[in-house]
Length: 315
Image (cartoon, rainbow, N blue to C red; front, side, top):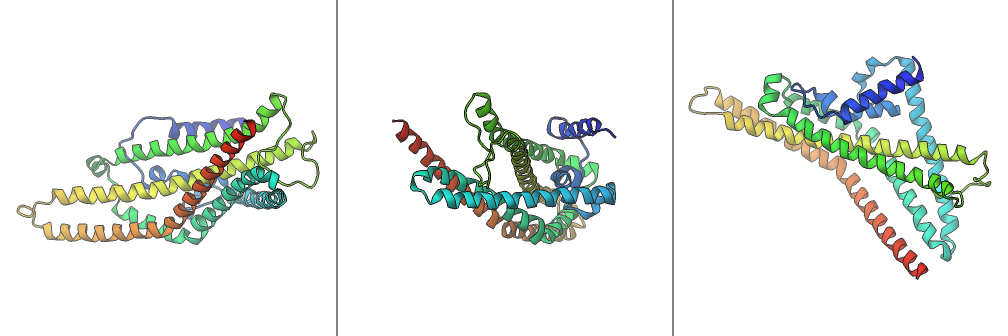
C-alpha cells in the first residue's frame, strides 16, 4: 500500500472519531470508551495485549522500535536541556533564559514520570480496574438506551476533542515560532534552548535538528493526550456505572418484585466495588495530578516573571 493511501486511511479514521457528531445507539466498551489505546498503538506502545492480534508481529516490532527510539531521543534532548540550564544559570544576566530552559526540563521530566507510572508501574493495576469496570458495563443495546450510555460516550468524545485540540495547538504554536522568526528575517532559533557542541545554525544541520525537535515534541504532546484521554475515560466510565447502579436501585419495587432482596444485594456489592475502584484510581493518579499542578504553578510564575522582566527592560 502506498504512503499516500495509508495517510488517507489514517486521516479518515481520525476524522470519523474527532469530527463526526453522530451518536451511535450501540456502544462498545473498549473501542468507544478507550479510543486512546489506538493512539498508544500508533506511537508503538501496546496497552491492551488482547487487541494486538490485528497487527502482524513485524508491524508490532516496527512500532515498538519507533516508541523506544522516541524515548531515547527524548532522554538525549532532556540531557542537552540540563547542560544548557547549568551553563546559562551560572550567569546572572541570563537568568531569564534559564527559566525558559527549566520550563522545558519540567515538561520533559513530567512526561517521563507519567510514562513510567502509567504505562509500566501501574499498568497491571489499571488493567484489573478495566476488567472490573467491564463487569458492570451494560453491553446490550436495550440496556444502553435505557441507561443513556451513548449520551455518556458523546460527552466523553467532546472532552477528548477539546484535549486533542489543546495539545495540537500547543505543538503547532511551539514549532511555528522558529519558522516565523526565519520568515520575518530575524535570527534563526531552535524550538527549545538546548546545548549543542557545534554551531546548530549551519544550513545543512539546522533542518535536521529542527525535524528531530519537532518529532520529539509531537511524541511528547501526543503521548500526553493519550494518557490524559485514558484517565478521562476511566473517570467517565466509573461515574457512568455509579449512575447505572443508581437507576437500577430506583427501579426496584420491594412490594411487587420477588427478587428485590437479591437485586438490592447485587447493587450494594456493585457500589462497594466501584467505591474500591474509585479509591484505586485516586491512589494511581493523585501523585501525577499533584506533580502536574506544581508544574503548571511553576510555569505560571515563570511566565509572570518573564512578562515583568520584559516590561521593565522595554521601559
